[in-house]
Length: 329
Image 1 (cartoon, rainbow, N blue to C red):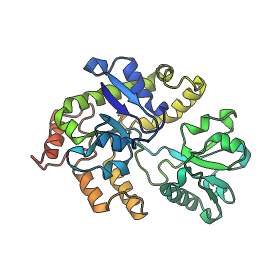
Image 2: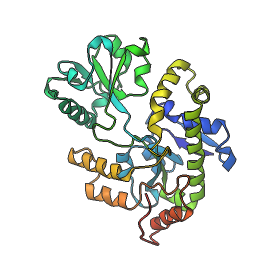
Image 3: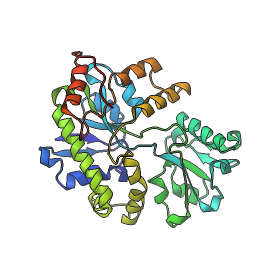
């Protein structure tokens, strides 16, 4: 059993390629019996569970990846989920919000008071010529806001996943307004598909095969979205299939780079986002330590499809301290 921990409390359409790969037998073709897990963080977040060996693969944020860089339990990212960040402002047409500066005087809920999101929102509003100090920001505590809170008049807008939350309300989709942060503010990959260093050292071919099967799943999900929705149905049977399809259509373009490849990390963007987090006090480790980890291949593309086996071998050898060579991004 290969245990894969998803990043959130439940699956969503961003995982469609993985579920479709499993349904189509792409993992089984390599002899892998894959189990996707999600849920609460009672035993720790996905990065903590991965570092502790409770799961084999996990989807983690860059900050978590950089924090867990200790010996054999170090985390190595071998693919990324999205080519841009997934957050943004969500509201509906009744609020009159059409752009970031329209948030002046509005009540904006920021999930769990995440400081990074305050910084991103401030940059987005100021770039649009608005005054961030005129926004009424609301911290909901341990609860995440959703579109139903806007419909009930509790907030005027909120920050959350721009390709999932907008479709969870009762209004027609054309009444929803989404202002994605995307590439305008702190560009970054959303989640990093990661393994422990010791697992990569022990079985690099398994990681390579998982990446190949997953990439095939995402390519198929893009080509045949209805089949992707069908693959998600057992895990998301409580969500209307039209909601799943609308969300899937929104998130799909973010999966692939300019050459149409899934999973490829832009290392320049990884470094620039790391510096951005350090500048604003959001980085979990000192910046120099984070950059050393990145330069040491804690984020690599070498195990993705169409990469040479010598690249993967170099990543493994580097972790064992055998060689010090630059890898192709």
